[in-house]
Amino acid sequence: MDLITGTWGNKHNVFDNDVKSPNYHYKNIFRLLKEQEPQKEIGIFSTWLDNRLKLVGEGLPQAGQIIFDYKFDGYELNQSAYQHDLADYYIHRIDERVTNETATCIRTAAPDLSWVYLQYTDDVAHHFGDSEQFNQSVISLDNQIGRMWEAIEYRQNHFHEDWLIIITTDHGRDPTTGREHGHQSDRE
Image (tube, rainbow, N blue to C red; front, side, top):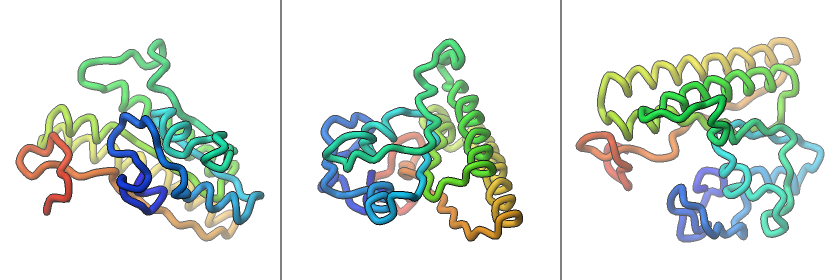
């Protein structure tokens, strides 16, 4: 939640994935945009529903009752399409779907502000730490970002739009194994 509000957990009250009581007093970037320019369109593309429903608080009065115009998320709940496995490879398949839906939506609808969350590199790092598996997951992520970038270039070339893309991780890794979160370490 730090990234979308510009504040630390001691203010927005989210410290981990167990989002119990977020403080929506600190407005997120989607709420700020919609309050200033309600006609602007917003999109979210994610493995989890929690990014939309808990972190942003879609539809909640205390979170500004914002509604995403484009939403592609919650695939981790569809276990018939994405059968869960011990190595979390199903998350890679979900990230592929999220990537494809993001690229298609950018080409056809071009939301004014979007959040794309790809999870597989995080899962691989937790399982394998600093490893060849992690390196391969980063290469895969780079390819996924490349496909979304191609959609952005399409918009820039065909519609003369000016786009900004920000790529970041949601946390770093511990300095010893790379398996755990680092908590303000030099490595991060």
